Image 1 (cartoon, one colour):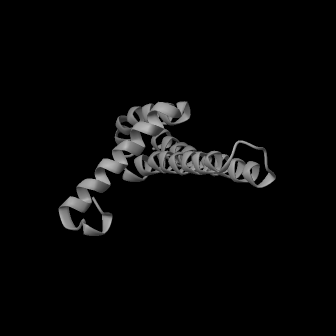
Image 2 (cartoon, rainbow, N blue to C red):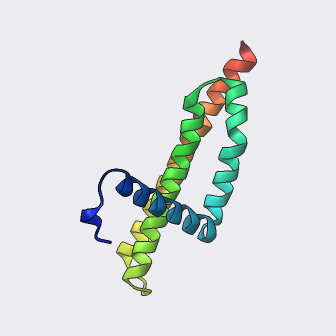
Image 3 (cartoon, rainbow, N blue to C red):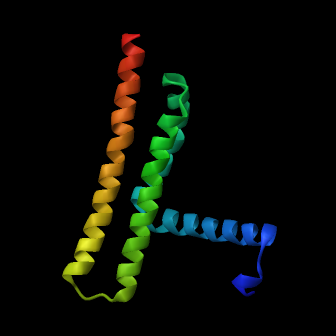
Amino acid sequence: MDKKSLSGLPRLAAAWRNSMAGFRDAWRSEEAFRIEVILALLSIPAAIWIARDALLIASVLLVLIVEVLNTAIEAAVDRIGPERHELSRMAKDMGSLAVALSALVPGLLWLAALSEKVLA
């Protein structure tokens, strides 16, 4: 079916199917993604108990989002070719750095929330 012919709910349904295929691909191919999903699922009840704040949950989801984007970068670079190239290395390393930096956000927010709970 031509993508241009889809609109409204059929387009939304197609986008949802594509998103679920992406989730399946990330789950099957990326151990880091599986670990981060499990941590996110475990952290939701803890976030509700600690702060009753959506910001803690959103911060964990941020890591998942950046991990998915990093995986997309890696797949695109690998699609270009298997040979080593400095720009390919840079793209992959910067994607990895983005994941590491995004992991600092929940780390800092959770530390702040925990310290506030303990000191309150």
